[in-house]
Length: 86
Ligand SMILES: [Zn+2]
Image 1 (cartoon, rainbow, N blue to C red):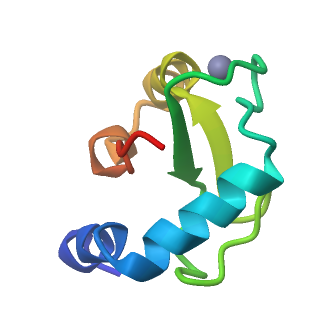
Image 2: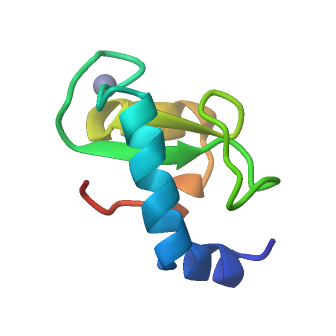
């Protein structure tokens, strides 16, 4: 999975649908702080695109917690992730 195809996936109708399912499954709450605002679906890995499992492949975080995590890990995933508002 290169960066380009990942970003194309994030723009696809498949991901929009999947993202909605994931948010519903997470009860529209941030897994870290329980906030229901500025939620983002964060990929933990890119192995199962299209078949993501909550807690396995993706997690739901609010913007603040997401930023904290990415800074902690020092990765550049942050800018690649899905910033669409739900
Ligand atoms: Zn949070």
